[in-house]
Image 1 (cartoon, rainbow, N blue to C red):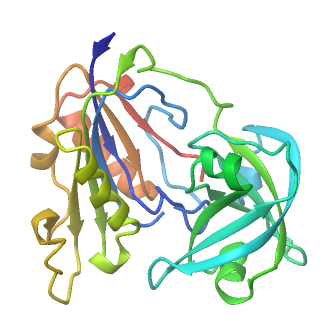
Image 2: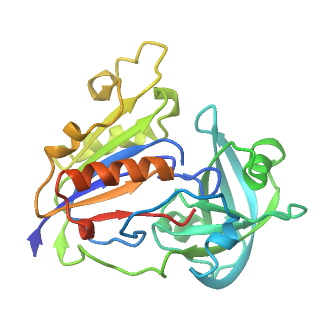
Length: 280
């Protein structure tokens, strides 16, 4: 198998998307060496228009038939604005693939939420649980998670994604190297940073991460200092990774995706090498 390069750009609470899916609001850009799968991508130019309801935006997207009851069995504050929910899944037929989201049904709340799953399929297989990272917003489902949700609260979940899970460009390649650019307001909003540092230590030379903070008011802790840049992700950061075998994955709020897509276009990156979600 050949090796290729994959460059990924995304907002890591969209690795976790909050309000409408979970993981948004911290922009991040990652550079990966050809990935073996790309399931959550759409190419092209997106336009930020009026905010539609989750079900309206995703009406034509794939959804599993199974709707499962779930019970909240853990609540953790990942940051000042993001809560991680741990959910025990009642239906043994409930499954998902990495990169998919769930429709989130809350008794007594008419608006259906859409949140990305931030745990692995393996955790569901082993323990019968999955996890969501939800950012605090005024959107009713996210607001409920942050103000009313408690241990043993009951909800219902249904899995969906952009086109149905499919392996795409990159599945003929072995994993090469991954470079993640992850941006947030400050280091306290860099979700899962300890896990990312652990991955870098476990796979030296294979996985690297650069944290960008744009409004840091306190001193960066010693552990993070070698990995932190106090400014936005720039074109100069990205140009060093441009090559014909590099793939770019972007995850973040629509304006961030539009901005990074334009930077990559200016650098001559082909549109079919750039992937991002625009379901929200």
